[in-house]
Length: 373
Image (tube, rainbow, N blue to C red; front, side):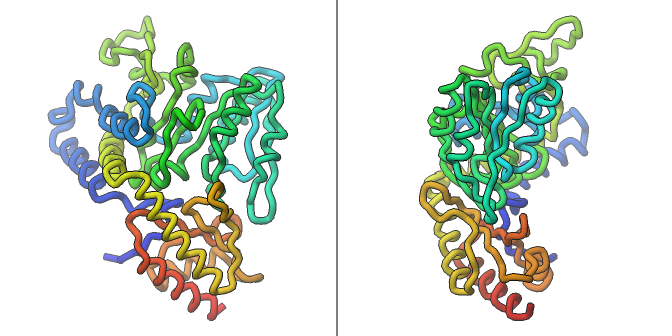
C-alpha cells in the first residue's frame, strides 16, 4: 500500500481514522441488513451527532447548525431562499472559489440582480478596500470565502459583516478553507451564515458538510431546496402540508450519506478535544517552516504574511518557466508528497496530522526537483 505525506489539506484531507472507522461501521451495518440496524428513528436523528459537534466547534447553539452533503448544496439552498431582488447587487471577489459565487450568479440571472466581483493582483491577493468599495445601498448580499483557496488570504469577517449590515445586506461565508484550521466563534464573526464541506480541514470525507445560520436571518427563511426531511416531523409522510422546523435544520431536506455525517462528527469532536487554539498554533508553525524553507530556496511567497490576513495555506511562485503542475506531479510520483497546483502557484497546506519532519521532507524534495528542471 502506498505511503503518502499529505501536505495538501486545502485539497483533500487524509481522513481522520476515527471518522473512517465510524463511517465504515455504518456502511457495514447497512450491508448486513438495510434498516435493521439503521431504522427510522436512527435516520431521523442521523444528523444530530454532527450538529452537536459542529455547535461545539463554532461556539453556537445546536439550533443554529444544519447538515448537508456539500457546502455548495447549502449555498444553493441559501441563495434561492434569500433570492436577491431585481436591482440589487451581490458582492464577492474574482479570487473566490467558483462555488462561492455560482449559486448567486444563477439566482441573479433569474431575478435581474447584479454580480460585482473585486479584482486581484498577480498573486491572487484581493485588497479588502476594493471589496468594501463595491458595497452600496443596493447591495443585498456580500458573499466571501473566509480564506481564499488559491493563496490562503484570510478576511476580517466582523468588518465585512458590519459593512454589509450597515446597508441592510447580509454576509454569507464559505468557510471550507478555514473551519477546522482556525478558531471560529460563529456569532462573533457577524456572519449571517457560514458553510463548510467536511473533507478538507475538518478531516472528514466526501458527502457531508455543515452550516451555521444565524437566528436573526433564518426566521421566515424558506430553503431553496425542499424534500421529505423538510417537514418538522419527517415521518409524518403527507404531501398536503409542509411545516418547516423552527431552527436551522429546516435546511436538511433529504437523505444523505449518513456514514459520512457520523464520521465527520467524530472528526470534529477530535478537533474540539485538541482545542482549536492549539490546532491553529500548530498549523501556523508548520506554515512558518514552509515559508522559511521556501525563502531559502529563493522562492516567492504569494500568500499574505501579515498576522491579520495569513492562514495555514502557503502558496509559492516558482521560477519563471517552471510549471507548478509538473512540480506537484513529480513530488507525488517520486516522493509520495502531496501538494497542489492552483492558479499557477504551488500550494502547500499542512494540518494537525503533519509535523516538522514532513515539512523538512517536502523542502528537500522540492529543492531536488527544482534542480532537475
